[in-house]
Picture 1 (cartoon, rainbow, N blue to C red):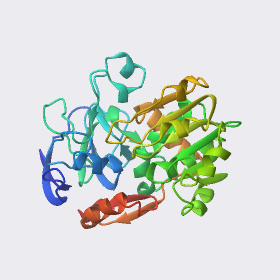
Picture 2 (cartoon, rainbow, N blue to C red):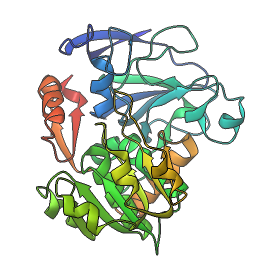
Picture 3 (cartoon, rainbow, N blue to C red):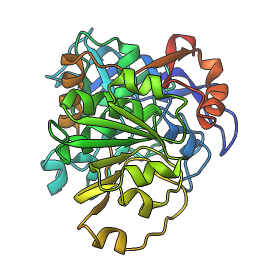
Amino acid sequence: MTTVSAYAAPAAKAPLERTTIERREVGEFDVLIDIKYAGICHSDIHQAREGWGEAIFPMVPGHEIAGIVAEVGSGVTGFAVGDRVGVGCMVDSCRECDNCKAGLEQYCTQGAVMTYNGVGGDGEPTYGGYSQKIVVDENYVVGIPEGIGLDEAAPLLCAGITTYSPLKHWNAGPGKKVAVLGLGGLGHMAVKIAHALGAEVTVLSQSLRKKDDGLRLGAAHYYATSDPKTFEELAGTFDLIVSTVSASLDFGAYLALLKTDGALVNVGAPEEPVSLNLFSVINGRKTLAGSNIGGIRETQEMLDFCAAHGLGAEIELIRADQINEAYERVLASDVRYRFVIDTATI
């Protein structure tokens, strides 16, 4: 076991504080990663504050991990010491179910092992990226291509893949009109990726406060959802809407913005149940769907795509002692567009 410094929430809703955790010894197929940067995802806050249900404490959040390989096990073939690598939201799965075999480990029927707030195969809690080092099976590690800074790459391990996966699955590309609902950590990457895929991108945001940013990131249009005229003007417009917000929505109003056979896909996860008048989907043969990160193969594909198109996250680099302040700023939508922790400060 190796003792490393980390930042952890000792209990639900408690401020995060510096502590130490134990990392397992490097096994035959393991990779030891010196973490350089860790993104702060809104889901870190949901889980540290038990917004999504009972959680495991102490909790070391962080599933947007970028670093350098420091050691590999004797059986590792995919990585070598010195490689630039990333770890996303999961660190294991059953590997035997149909979904795992299809490269959809995020939908493992036995339940994927989450990078933090999970339980590993050894029965021990998993601890995430707000730490100096992590040991991960090589099958759940991805390579970060040259051309993306590790700091800008870290958020791609969640925000990037969470938006790339549905955009690819629902065929965003030339000739398609795609709306991104919310311009935050996920939304800004959805705009960049959808634009790079060739789609005509519209941002739907509460106000026009971030309009200049949205257009700079690749949107062709930007509308305020606080303006009722937006819903009149855009009725029946979109092939695909990707909702990145974690607040409850009037789904009927947004479904009305879709063309026939259009899809509204949720990647933001509200803490409360939502209601829906089914005629919103019956009329127009529309789809209300969800999507959860991506598999390991698709995550590597996303990183290679981002490198080829020069895409990284828009980040604000912070010290570890600013994590609690950053959480409050995320909740206040006061970040453009992803906080990333310099783990040298832990």
